[in-house]
Length: 134
Image 1 (tube, helix red, strand yellow):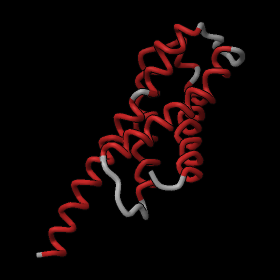
Image 2: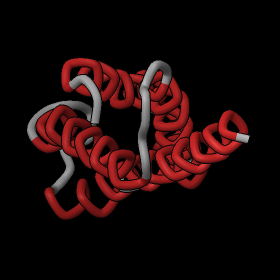
Image 3: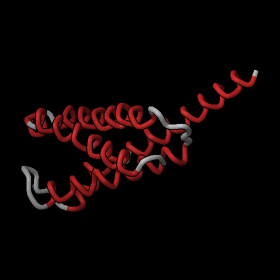
Image 4: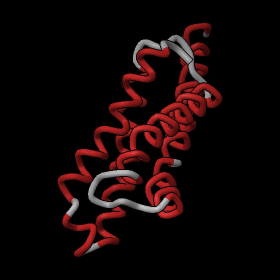
């Protein structure tokens, strides 16, 4: 993994984007729960893709293992920031089981996305190396 500071800063953004979207679409949580859940899942995955691509800019090399490590860091950051808000305060006051079965489970998509980005980056870098050598 590259810069820890960059990874942590971007991890905050990965958490913040879904937080803002959840705030904006929160009325759907009670009136159209499946729509709310779908919007949030797409938002988390989309945030991981967009921010993951921003992280990759300027990286000399990254593979699936580094992508997974980055995603695991972002997952931990999201849960560490989010869990106290949802378990102790905030509008939902969820139980630990409900939090991990709902919100934290959605965050599991982050390392899956970053693993894929790392694999794609690695495969693309390998092809680019082959073109330079040939």
